[in-house]
Image (tube, rainbow, N blue to C red):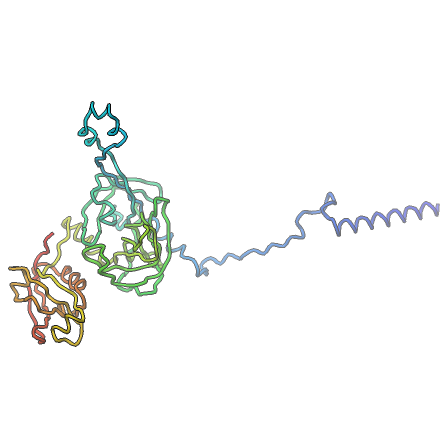
Length: 377
């Protein structure tokens, strides 16, 4: 009996030793050992509204108001493959091929500015189009009607007939500062609605050579083909500009994009909705920016003002007594430094109003009142 008990005790001891070794060194070999109990995972704690490095809220606010604009027009194109076929040439002749119509399409973006279906976009997006279609983020599509457009500022107003449209909130572009963070929203390259982020690089950009009347917000938020007519917003999702163009040698974004300030867009939109077109003030003069050489020839110590190069006979300026060689230094109470500033200031004046112009003539300041005319189309 004692011998049996000793064998039993030794057997139990060996089994416990084996169990200890296996569970310590190779626990996965033990059939009922739990899996993954030795893996520790560190998870981030949701921070919700305290997250400060995201612009998701602004994007969610503005993106439903940004639409894709698809346009098409009928053009005539010579099909070379058929034209080069001698049999078809003899039978039909060149005139037949030249008369064959073809449709081309392009894309851009737009911004819903009213629950009644009004949309702001660029003039060049819908220029010469005979069919315009708008696609919303929620999947709805609708044919759009062009209410009017203004090539001078490259703006156009469309109208669609849909219900429950998410209109964007207008911001104050006059309060935008260089260095402010902005978001550009649109449909670049047709890949679908996208958001890019950047800062305001400059304000009041003019003489870029894009439009007749230029007063752009410059930004490095990527604006690519297809973004034209889309929204430039602040970090609260408020509209501060309409994306218009990029400075590029390749067609892609190089970090310099331009947007029309929303305060300018509101003025143009109001006129288009009221009359179908835009009426601007006009003086009837051509102007030239001052250079050091010009200033020296006039005996001036600085470059302020703009030289009146010519005056249209019987135009508003001519009737008021403005002469070639006068140097225009102020329109109303606003001093001017270049011809682009004068062009924009005068264009904003209602035709028929009288404005006070301050000029330099023979080195002496003179005030002349001019009745503003209507700028020819």
